[in-house]
Image 1 (cartoon, protein in one colour):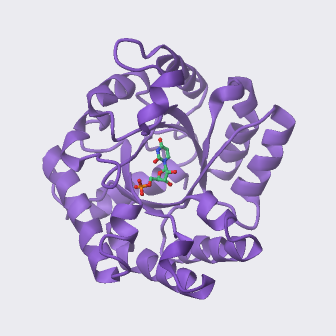
Image 2: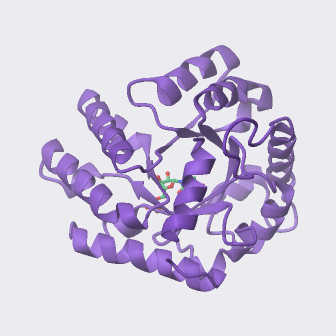
Image 3: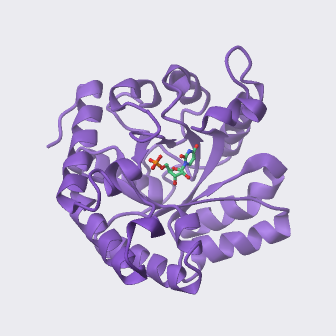
Length: 281
Ligand SMILES: O=c1ccn([C@@H]2O[C@H](COP(=O)(O)O)[C@@H](O)[C@H]2O)c(=O)[nH]1
């Protein structure tokens, strides 16, 4: 089963469109063992409300080798729970280096089923990521319009969305080359997805229309001000095709209280469903 298929299946079966971000911040913990235990607890406790999980590589890399071991455990635990792992690394480089990144993060010891990638060096440099993801049944999520306030400097804002729209057009072109469901259970969504911030509710319908076969990842829910009720434009009929992502808003919903993380994940799930007019089974 492909990444898109597993995610869509979880959305249909569990009624969730939530991506739970696992971004453990060293300052919140006594030591790396504490960080590891809490992150694994949050993962396990929120799994029923998650369509996928998204560890942000920076927080694991910040801990050096120990962080990579923790990441490996987080990925293994997610797989045991049946949760697809989307690694947020925003990788991108000239093609030959991109291949090494792709091998490391999509097939290596700490591999996820999907990876966020940066198109700034040109679409040709994404080919190794896309080919590796396709060979693994995985996915890449291309940064199209990021959630941060300063994205408009390069990606376009307000009246001019020129760069973001061009990246979306190139994503759609890449998707056009992919046969969906050939010999495997097709879901209608391909191996090239796109990142569009949950902080741009007014733009979501545009990017949904530009990339009808792309899963959209919507980071920025919660801590960055993205509201679940404002994201409907990103979804296709039936409430599929997008994943709204919250990290701090789940992991640190109330300090290190895991019960509060569960409540926050459930609330995000329910608010998304209410906005879309669908119910969790
Ligand atoms: O456009 C983007 C792309 C990725 N991110 C990442 O998502 C999480 C957001 O964390 P919160 O705590 O929910 O704000 C973080 O890992 C970012 O690097 C993003 O925010 N915006």
